[in-house]
Structure formats: C-alpha cells, structure tokens
Image (tube, rainbow, N blue to C red; front, side, top):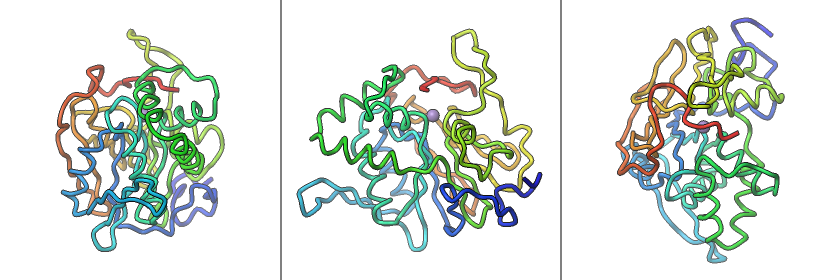
Length: 280
Ligand SMILES: [Mn+2]
C-alpha cells in the first residue's frame, strides 16, 4: 500500500464495503449520540435540517430527516447506550439510510448491542442495560429491524473521493481502505496497547499524533471537552451523554457546531482524553 496515498483517490485498494468515495458531501458529521436524541434534534435544527416524526403505512413510527439543499448527515457511531432516547435515535439513523439522506458507521456500543441482539454472550455493562430496557419496551419487530440495520453497517466510511474518512475510533494509515478484522477493530475500538490504567480501563495509543496520511480522519469514542484537532484529524466526541456537548463537523468547511447537553445523563464520564469504557 502506498505510504502516503492510502485512502485517497490514487489508491485503488479501497475495499468495496468501505468505499463511499462517490459521496462528495457536503457533510454534517455527528457521533457519540448515546441516545441523546433531544440534543441531536436541536443540533440538526441549528444545522438547518428538518426532523419530522411520522408513521409508516403499517403504523410503525418513523423519523425522517430533511437536510439543507445538497448536504448529507453522517453518523459516526455510538448511537446507543447510556442515554435516555436510544429508540428514536435508532429510528432516525434507520430513516436517513432508508431515505438516502445520510450514512452511518457503527461504534463499539452499537456493535455490542448487535451481538446482544444476535444472542451472543456479552457483558451487560457500560450503559448497555439502558438500551436493552428501552428496546424491550418496543414491539419485538423493532429489535429485528434494529438488528438488520446494525448488521448492514460498514465498519467505517471512506468518503469524498478518498479525502475524508469517518471512523468511530479513528483509523491509522495502514488500515485505511481495508476491511479485515484488524481494520474493523481499530475503527470500532481504537488502538489498544494491551495495558490497563489505574482505573482498569484499556490504554489506547494516541494514533492521531503520529498520523501522516492525506485523508482527513474524523473520529470520536474518547470524550474531550472541545473538538480536538491534531494534524489531519479531529476528535468530535464532546461527551454529550456525560453532560458535555454534542458536536457536528461540517465538511468541507472544517467547522464545528456544538450544543451543550441538556443534562448529565451518565455521571461516569471523564474528559481527559482517556477512554470512559471498554465496551468491547
Ligand atoms: Mn465508543
């Protein structure tokens, strides 16, 4: 793989599953919603989107998003867990995929919910119980729809002719364009050293500090007080569910728009650049 051009138009080795280069934006990229649907609606309103809560012909609730002319919503993963409104957040994400008004990459929490829905043994912690409780209050068909939605998500997105990569936990250059187990784990969980910190959480490599790729990488997963710009990357997880804020990155403008959380939904957050959980 080319040292510098991985993930760009010049690199022909983009796996089909992650190849969204034909989508040029402009985009509004939002991640780590964690069921903070009220804040998501407010932020989308600030960005000029119209959100409507409707019903399908069969009576099933549906949430429809109408972007401003020409724009597209990109959801950067961790739709679920910890927060109060996981179900409408999922409905909105399913709605944008169905209508073609947006794209979605999964986060580690979404992937763990997917495995729970498949009946696999998962450790119910780090907010998964809040999602399960909310899903169990819905008709069983909603779990089926949620599983089908999660099963269909690509591990990350290569966008805009290869200039932009949206990956929940970021993506080092060597993994860009790949669709193997390691690339998938990096995109969903990040780069772990194998060590644990004094609180028992996995230590992650700060890959962005040495990143020299040409594709701009937008990621989240580790809460920070303000969007963290490092080289050709930005972390936009500003910890809404922990009482921080919900942030969108506008592309290609490279501007962020944030709104403060309406309340602290989960008091366990920290904003020091270390992971808040190891929901793996
Ligand atoms: Mn995450």
